[in-house]
Length: 350
Image (cartoon, rainbow, N blue to C red; front, top):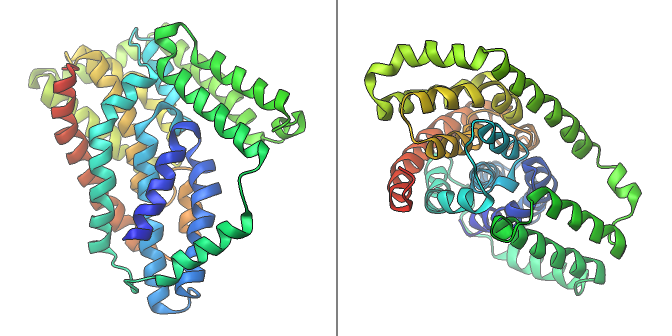
């Protein structure tokens, strides 16, 4: 459990400043998980080690799903959701998102690993070698280097600007570009490093196209038509029941998607329009759909970028992955709509 929570905590610390769950979970957390699993428990052909590796894999992956929902800058499609909400005159700041996600996010991060411990218990319950290995590796790495210190300082400044930017008039995009400029001027990055980030450029181009297409869906009347049709079907139930039905349809339709971004670009705007038409408080509707745009990645082994990376480790069988994903999805929905609902009431969101 300690190792599981440590992996989740590492992901949580990185989440606010890593706007890609694939880069964070697949590029940082997963290699650590593999190293710990092999070093502390032995090869995967040992049944007990394999069972323990499955537990850690599921905890780390489901933790990433939750931390992605807690910050706008923790998953690539979150800024797209914010932009689609803005097009419907609903403003969501970095701080608003983070504060609204705080209570349900913390509860999920505490309870979901415990649930996985019951559903997929580790074969080895203690790992005294893990601490010794970690200390030895830290000693081998030595103290923090100059470039690492500069990078850490710039990340702290960026996070501060993302949180307090709306109060002091600093745009989030301007802050990110300024951070990139500082990294280049300080020599922490060179331009070739930026050019080699193919996924970042790919995301930039695709997002521009997706936002443009979403805008034209509204201008051509599709969103208005969809809102009337769906709103008419569930409009007699009241906004609470109606929005609950919409949210569940939005959540579990992710079984049909292999990308959070694809799901958000296809369904976020029309579902938000219908929710508001039903009488749901606009900011509440946008935030819940935004949170669910991450939490539904718990379902399958192809749900989002890190999914095939973690599943490809071979520790977790397909049936176990889908079973755990289905159970965790229900628990997350109950937590985020239950604990979250009370928290959002306290914050005045509804």
